[in-house]
Length: 178
Image (tube, rainbow, N blue to C red; front, side):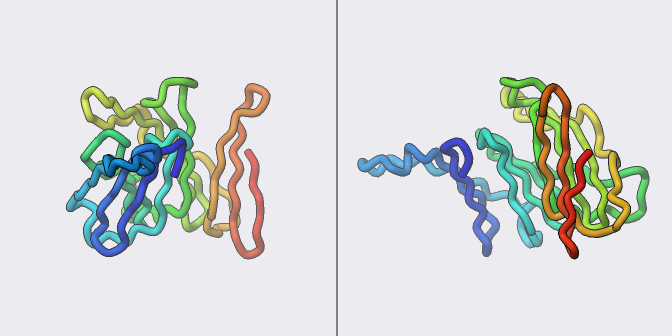
């Protein structure tokens, strides 16, 4: 749940259920649950579900594949993960999102941490009026930790006008900042 919006991914059938929290507490039985049943998610090993702080954007990490859904959209999009003409797609483990312009929730940057200690960046725009996901900047490598350990979590923050990225790796747990 983020910002009063509840997102649920069912384990067995990979249905996405979305509902505003205030509609679930309606005693008259008028809960508004939106269901997204997309074949694109069927039989995919979803490892992680990430919802942005506004509760509008949801990403599903499935090994080498990433899927995206917008709060008001019935469609699930597959995010392109092939990078640098690589023969093998990357295995993503963590994600974080940041809006490019405060108050504009359609254009956002994502950082993705990989299984082998790399961080990738992309800038996306979801137009709610067109129900379309477009790439402003394609996925590209922006940082390597050098120790080739999985990046378990990522956080992006603006501190004093500077953008700071924190990455956490495992065994032993290490915090990287850049």
